[in-house]
Amino acid sequence: MTADQPRDTTASRATDRPGDRSPFALGLLLRQAHWRAATVMTEALRPLGIELRHFAVLIVLVDRGPTVQRDLAAATGSDKAGIMRVVDDLERMGLAVRNTVPGDRRVRAVQITPKGVELFDAAHVAAQPLAERLVAELAPGEPERLMDLLTRFAYPGR
Image 1 (cartoon, one colour):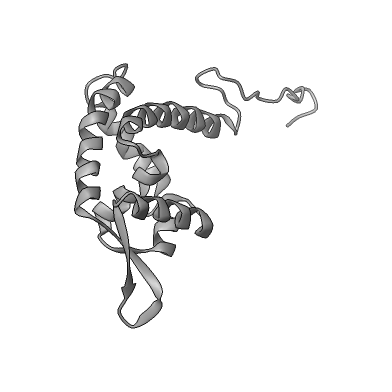
Image 2 (cartoon, rainbow, N blue to C red):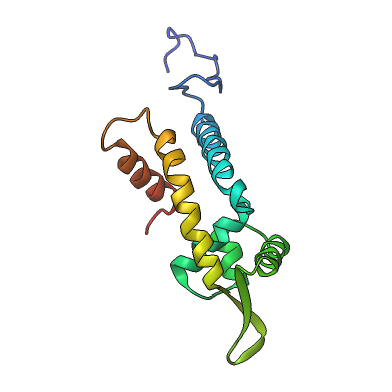
């Protein structure tokens, strides 16, 4: 910077305007996108009697099979107490069961039940039109591109 060039002291502002240059703009935009998607998914799950936090665990169980609780917590962004409450709920509803892990009686693996798989499938059917509504403003190919970008953003180096 030279003496004859004024120093720009105007800070970027974090607003709801697309293209905001603030370092916080991406986080705020992702948060708003999350709220919108979570609202739509909550609407789809409500008639089935489960919440998004329950469905997040079911997704992991369908994808990975029986999973220990600490890994469920990590995969869903939950803490130990939170994941225990969710698994308690799923067990009460007959959607999952806890089984001992061979070789370590203290560790429990959570497994989805046939009733849980049935509900999981029903949730996808219910969510499909709502999910399509979420991406209705995007051009052909953009929903897939958005998923790719968000996946690479959320899981760097994978």
